[in-house]
Length: 113
Length: 111
Image 1: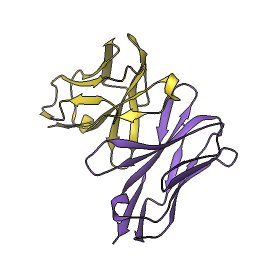
Image 2: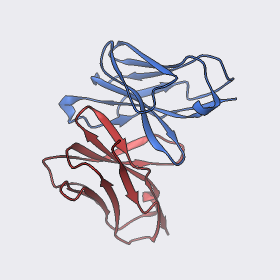
Image 3: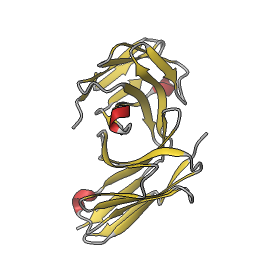
Image 4: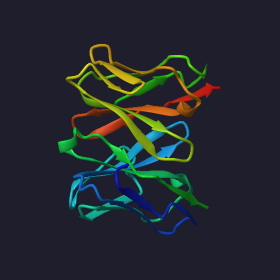
């Protein structure tokens, strides 16, 4: 399995609080992605990164921000969590030298009360 | 918005049967297409990647085909086993580095 870890794996928080999810990779892949998975919607892209300090918005970016200060780490921040952000969040990596094949982390289950 | 559709949403087959899962997409200008498996409560596991220049890829009992002109990919599973029970997802990558996922086919293989 690709070396991708996510932390925390589970989190319960209250509406209005900030939340940061971390994705860490040991594969030195250039691209990193954050997705959310919800019943009936499948996987939807939140933000992605082409490299250090190089990020872009995905399909459902409102209410989320990201940062990538090192190749191996990609952080997803919910500035003020809302109940609609209750979801399972997945990090993924890929690299142009590997045909952009995506590999996924184990996921973080976030509940916003 | 690019659409990726997987039909059926759920499939139940007896052990040993060969089966085909379908994935259709609206735009033929794809870069690659990837099939994944997801077990309940787990992340996605990559099964096969087909690049736009390829027609098919094989791994063990799995064979994935790609027909860009018709906007379709199929995942063929030979001699199904109970351990194959999972949700199967396809994802299409277009230029612009955004993947678009189908909502998956939930497969149950009955012993």
